[in-house]
Length: 125
Length: 327
Image 1 (cartoon, one colour):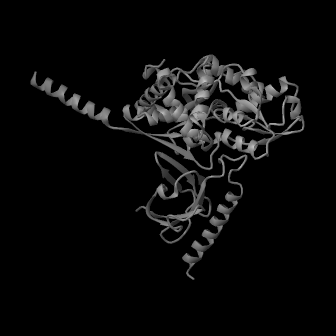
Image 2: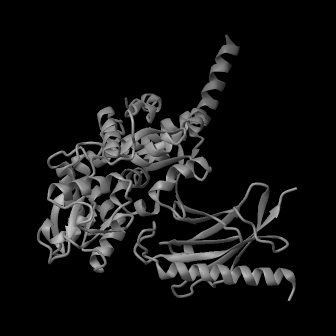
Image 3: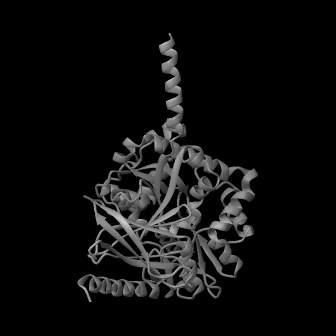
């Protein structure tokens, strides 16, 4: 297994663990989440060499609304929002980088459950 | 002469183009507010095309993880251009050094109903019970504490569980995790229809005050005055639409769709606000100085501000309301 694959695997496992934690208290009290009907989006933002990017902005567009989160130290993000996953569009950005790829790991049309989407950024020249 | 005519024509053409050019405006809203009654002015402005008509490319942006206390931060980290925020959170951030400022009022004099499980019939029944409260630093908690105190219950007589947002508190009540909760509209009206008990209203103890505002950083506002003027004109149109008796059914339908209640429940919410007039909504986004001063006084009363009370004008910039012809 290459170092890049190991990084992606480790980051994906940690991000999935975070998503599971959110599921546990979705509808969550004391947080700013709603009634437990939300879809959980999670994933990682990596550079083109597979290194995680902290502090990147993840935007999820649905109708005329945008939900915005920031990646953590291991490039992971998670959002629990009420949207139609198949009508939602994810993008990522960070100053000094441009987006080069989006990889939706959970196939469209999957029954309700966490949706994993990774994003790739390339350092701008 | 011909040159002057040509100059005028060019100015007219380019002026019209400038007006036609939509200005991008990102409006911050917390997740808990998104499908609440407090989103009504913005939902109406969007659904009726008032912002589009004013030449705005308007987008609602929800920072995550969110919370009422994070909205001014979202201005500072560039996530949003302007934001919806409850007055105490703006005041606290300004006193901590933020250059954020209120440019319009969105909701005044909120009505929160203290709703309890069907078996609870009086305030005395709440002794030793678990109450779902909003953020401890907010005005909802302050008024509900006062309401409880007026009816003989003080801190220690009940347990508190912090639950942000009326929809989440309604769930807490219905799932049995909370014995009583303050609910805004329309969830309070819906809960009553389901047999829950109304113990009292926050307005029983709270004087009139400004509850939520649109806030912006002064530095950003100076460079984007035209976008703010267009926003405020669109917001004014929304308030006029909501207040128009001829539009009452349309507004009820919007509330029903956004909040997930029946049109009949939504109609009762509008009757609560306007029959008789309870000054829950501004006429056009104007900021009442006395109402803002009252919000400051409530924070001082709750021990969140010490020393001489700051002037409301420290937290308000009226120049954009004036530019939009509202004040």
